[in-house]
Image 1 (cartoon, helix red, strand yellow):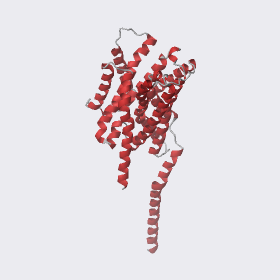
Image 2 (image 1 turned 90 degrees about the horizontal axis):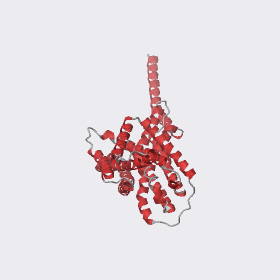
Image 3 (image 1 turned 90 degrees about the vertical axis):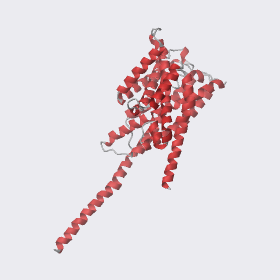
Image 4 (image 1 turned 120 degrees about the vertical axis):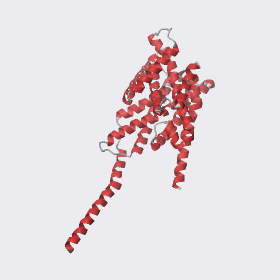
Length: 383
């Protein structure tokens, strides 16, 4: 009887130790293994390329088509201004990456609603106006450039051509998968790089002018700030990197998700926004190629890649529309189209309006304000 009782206690104790070891493994070993993978894991090359081309393609449409006439008037000051704005936009983008990842949101409206819910509607309106206005600029710029290549009939009204282009792009992008859209963007950005290289090779170095035309710099500043429009693509890039992480985790290669996404999002944002900056500086260093070679193909590639970026950003807002009841989104899109087309604008006027009014609020004031509020709440919670 004594032996049986002892064996029973021994078996029970052994089972308890096994259970304790299992719990210790779950609580200590597995999390350590998942975190340990952070230093060795990286996204697939295809994912990195998709993110960089999305950011580059979105940025160039608002810069390289409008800057050259202004930059050649004051190349050195304009380059310094552009580099300064690039740095500010990059810092703002890095703040947004952390906010988006930690709040687990995928558009500006939801991000603001999770931190500053009282201003979520104005933020959605501003974001839609931003993308819609750049889309209007691209639609206005596209027909004249295409006409120089294809000699379109002069009887075709400009507004008709723009409406057909917008309808075609909307249907194409909304019906295409994310992978297909990324492939479109890669194609256009590759074409943009190729044609830009040809322009540089067929041009010659320009002698910088030491004089400064301050009037051109005044017009240059809003357009330079608009170079931060790539921040609209941050949720899209985060989504691509997260998808890559999910696929990898299915095979047991675990990583710390937030650290992984923030790290690689920061890398692709820095690279994707640096490329247009370098292209602009190179453009300032060469003579204006418009008098030497036809720039139409380069401009078309720029417009198409930028248009895709704007449409992808707008598409992120589309799930919010339920039965066409989202008047904020439709008001922002319709407003930007009305300002551009109905008001007879479509060039630098629209970009000046967006760069001088919406960019400081959406890309500088908003991220800084949300970061301050979030840190204060975390500090109050710890206290």
